[in-house]
Image (cartoon, rainbow, N blue to C red; front, side):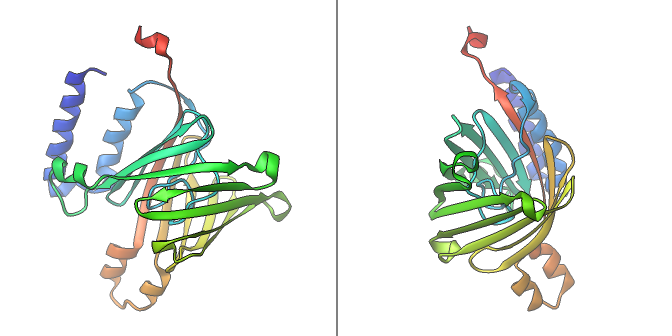
Length: 246
């Protein structure tokens, strides 16, 4: 992809963002996916998903595991766009921004936030995954483990400052080979939803974020606007070779 092509993509995206009728994530997602699909040679990944605030995990909490080496995931939840990349099966680095209440690419760029997660232990050798990192100004550590004897139930627990309020917990249960049910406490509120595996590369999320807040809200429109979250994640392993640049 040349600089000329990248400039054309940015101008097209800026035009779409100015048009409030198409700023919805279900319109923007296919376009942005096309950019990453043409960026290099891709092979099937593990289907990891970004959480609402960036790191791989459930709905609004990070897990103890990370992306594998050269694995990348591109996710979109409501107006939030996220991209993460796995380095050497040791850490993942991600960036996120959002299109909410803005029509300028300059403003969107200024809203960039970064996240980093390092895997300290992995389930294959230690019996559980242990990861630690940050998202913005939120520091955290998380562990997770999958229990085959409990039909594949995955449990995530962790601690962190600021929004995590020092404790978070999540459960992920495969109710069907292509559907996971998720329940979590993110340090402030409870979230409930599902993750549909559309393919080995694409996952679709639909969940209610903030069950306590929903219980206090009597207006359906407000609940839909603030608490219903849908998203889609695309994951691939990026096959990068220096020889291809020579």
